[in-house]
Image (cartoon, rainbow, N blue to C red):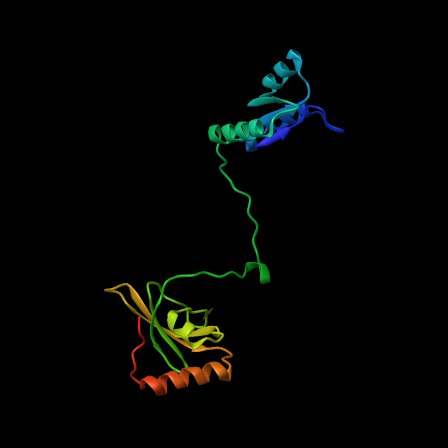
Length: 185
């Protein structure tokens, strides 16, 4: 979408519209003239240049939004600007459901609906960890086994940088509930 005034420093908005309309790269672009010029000759000139709408200033902001939405409805964008990110800007997080199958002082075994890549670092949150009332360390994926018939994947994770206080709480829970103790749902 191009919104152009008719009177701009150094260039005419009419010339800009004419240039855009004669460049096939912009043939799907909506063009609106947003100007204080109210005379019939100016409106006719803009229409001849190929504007899709002629909006006279001053205007109500709500009217401008409605007109812009109408222009996008008539000619939806075919491209969306994007930039490639790298470094710290490229890092992000995702949340997805997993089932925690077992917990040990070394790590966690989970069941999920997609393959995790060995070496990737993830955070796992569950009701069990909340009962420990301590900070949960990030976990690194050691290995992943998939079952094609069910579409489920079992992953073994190890704690990264686990503090001794966290490990003590895990050990205490295991010793209290037995090595084969079940975690309540």
